[in-house]
Image (tube, rainbow, N blue to C red; front, side):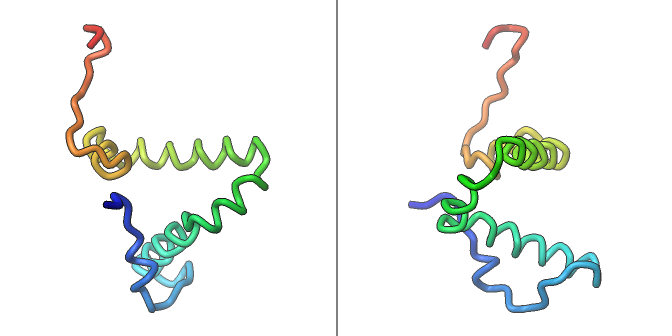
Length: 93
């Protein structure tokens, strides 16, 4: 059973634009992100990216995740791990 879903892009039928309002900006960004992650698109796009573009895109996405998600949210929402156990690096666990 798939663990990822992209229902928003399939169901959203309102304005896709930036600069009109925070609400439209948020919905437009959600729409763009889901369109951007389409399997067919990424298989064509990613090989065309330079090493620098790959690094910058990865760094930007990672920064947003670290800044706005707790460790638990990151593991549950992004990694799709049902149970996350925090490992204490100082104890070697």
